[in-house]
Every structure is written in C-alpha cells, then in structure tokens.
Picture 1 (cartoon, rainbow, N blue to C red):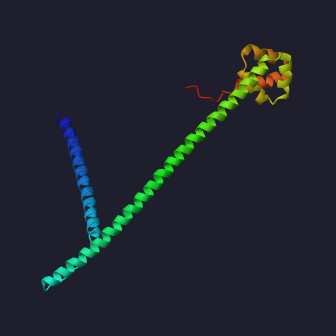
Picture 2: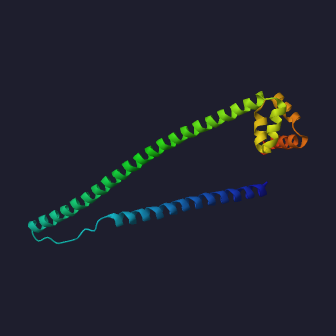
Picture 3: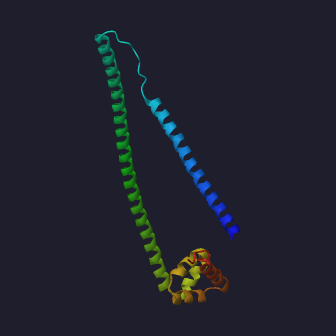
Length: 188
C-alpha cells in the first residue's frame, strides 16, 4: 500500500512540474512579445528635437515649426488615403466587370451545351426511327466510341435491334466500349 502511494505522489509531482513549466513558458513568450511591441512603438514615435528655449518667442517659433511639419505629414497621409480609396474603387469596379463577364460566359456555355444536346437528341431520334439494318450499316462506318455514344442514348430495344443487324466484330467492339464507360466512376 505504501508503495502505491509513493508512485502516485511521484506522478502528481511530475504533473505539477509540467504545469509549472507550461506556465513559465507562456509567461516567457508573452514577455518577449511585449518587449518587441514596445520597441516597435518606440521606433514609430517621431524624433522630438530637444531645444532649450530662452524666450516665449523662441518657444512659439518651435511650436509653429512643429505644427507645420505635422500639417505636411497629415497632407501626405491624406494623399495616401485618397490613393488607396481610388485603388479600392478601381479594384471593386474591375471585380464587378469580371463577375459580369463570368456570368455572361456561363450563360453562353449553357446555351451551347443545350444546343449540342438538342442536336444529339435529334440525331438519336433519327437513328431510332431508321430501320435497324440501315442504322447498323451507318453505325459500322462510325468510330466505335462515337457509335457507342449514340447506342447508349437509344432505348434498349432499338439498340438491341441495331446491334443484332451489325457484324459480330463491330457489335462486340461497341459493346465493350458501352460496358466500360463507367468502370472508373466512384460508387460511393
């Protein structure tokens, strides 16, 4: 029993030391950041010229010179802000133009896709209306990939009638392409 207590005390001591080290590290990293920010703040402060003024007129002159420097500095900052505002407006305008062009391009592509789909659907309907023997003769002259695309769109009974009217080699080649089109497609 006393052996268990000793091992438990050792574990608690180790955990307490880890907490203490963690706190020291956090305190130490905060001190470094505070020192760095105070040095940055000192670097940003303008250099103040120390002059001894013998008279109120000299003090007034020094203050008016400082005010002039501050006025020049404020004008420069206002110019920079105006330039940034112009740049921001130009970027915003250009982004809006690009968005409008992208929307126009999307609608044009959608129209082209719809037109192409309509053409293919119409041609598929023509092949479906043909006599299977005549359609088979056309399909044998097409590349197998092209013919497989049309046969995949036809109803199964029309596709079967066309395939049965084709030569066995051509029918087999097209069947392999139709069967293998979605092999690599994800199932989940």
